[in-house]
Image (cartoon, rainbow, N blue to C red; front, side, top):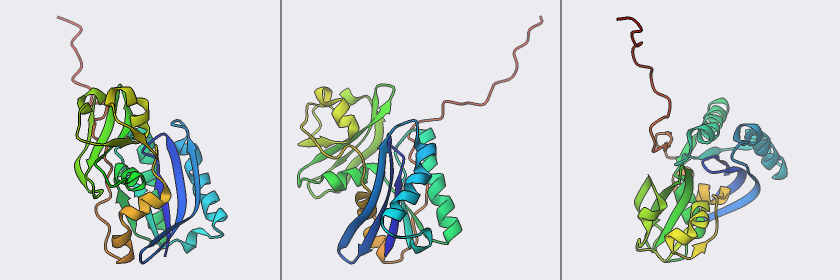
Length: 220
């Protein structure tokens, strides 16, 4: 089974092609550029390039997996809209994955782990995982100092690198999700042909834009 993986929940613009068989997740090709301002510009070319690198065409894709965040609205919506459009056009299922879960899969050490990504505004998105790799807390958005002393043996994600001195934990790779990690999180569901869960973004913050209030009176 050929799976197209996409993620734009972090500064990394990620697209890749994964071959999924029973018990095997093989990454065939990946294109990743770390540029928080280039999601809209680079994602579709990355998808096309990854497919070409794997010697495949869009019609060869059997399923699509897309990171659903948490992440900033502007970047995250690029990946999710692209994945939804491709799924609709190809008639293929689109499976959403928590981006932090994908990083945790790639960072698995057999010990309790924090995954932390940068939420800007001096805050981080985070989730905690037990020794089996199961998520036990989060995702949420908090100031990094809130996580000080959390019962984990290491931290992963670009937020962990940025705030390593605050967290006080050893930092392990990766900083960003890989296509293989994204697919591995939902491999069983994809292989079983199970219907995807609801495809919705994990923004975690209220939008900055709000409806304007009533006009103020300028006369007595």
